[in-house]
Image (cartoon, rainbow, N blue to C red; front, side):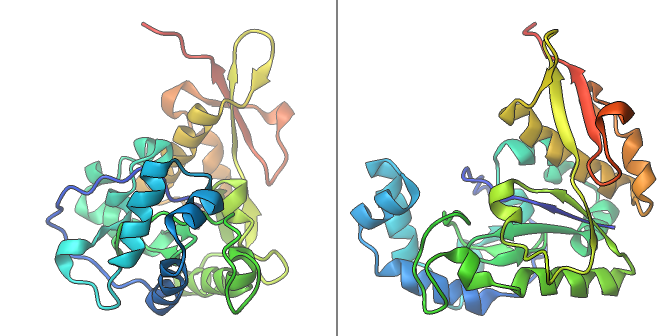
Length: 258
């Protein structure tokens, strides 16, 4: 099976001694970076609701974005992103065989790069999929990517012999995967915390759990969707009465501070 996750706003730019691969949609990233390069700091601040400091930082990133990037300005995607989902994924601790499997079966949806493999080299950026960046293709990034991401996932599914896609991405990012063009069955796990008044989704924990689910799939080389139901990382347990076939629900007691 394939699994997709979202990127992260926070980056870890530590040097990594690993071989990297070239993104499939590098030319699209160059195109979008050129469009974003024309925006001013106030434009970027408004586009992505950034602080002055973050708008300035990302303005500088787009100004220095390289069309033919050298190794010193890139990092492998799964190791460069450092948000909540990546705390659950813990990509740096995957062994060589696990990372090789992830390279074939794990994809990161990206506003700038479209679809990234774990070891694809990326430059530092922030361009959220929900951004209303106007391009020659439309008024936002959903218009820009169109059916491209769905078609890329269809192709990858065919290459690895899978007709199942486990969606561990956010709604914002998976919204860029055009459903009519996607030929894969989609399974979207949900993760909830129970404080005693009934299970609820808590964003931070749900993001981390989605990364942990992706890690679970990678480490166990899962191919059968039923195997997802055995996921118990962090104390989560499958809840059949709350679930549907394509939306398994996992609940755990709300974590308490130690």
